[in-house]
Length: 183
Ligand code: GRF
Image (cartoon, rainbow, N blue to C red; front, side):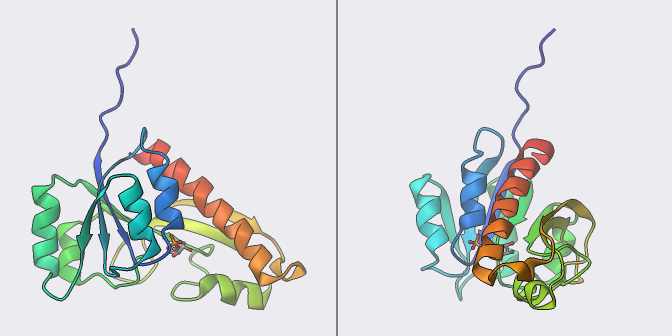
């Protein structure tokens, strides 16, 4: 007997920037049910991308608290959250409420190079560059690693801009894997 289609989980994607990672997820809409896009930057390019796909946008502005955001996510029956270049640290209460339900995409081979400017720091040190997708816990970039892939060994053999293109391609690939395997 054939299996019916898998029920899609309802996902919110949090962004702050260009939204290239969001775009990869939006292009996987048969695999991942993105219901909401949350942003703390009204003018983020990613907002345009979300609108192009007809997604509802939630602005995390001054009037919005994490408690309100959590309620809004629950009202919208959100089950999972993907941080796709969201540049704000989530507070403990929010993390507790959404425990094991938030993943983050990070541009390094964790546990190496957590934190900001990871790709630049890897390249500077000529250390292997790559991407990790991990569960989000309180400690920054430290949760269980779900997917990880190297994008370039000895990256200083090319300019940073070129190394970054390899990294971006790996991000897109891993996000597609995430959509297929986890949602
Ligand atoms: C990506 O490099 C991602 O790995 C990191 O933030 C960046 C987001 O880029 N967490 P974009 O805004 O999706 O283009």
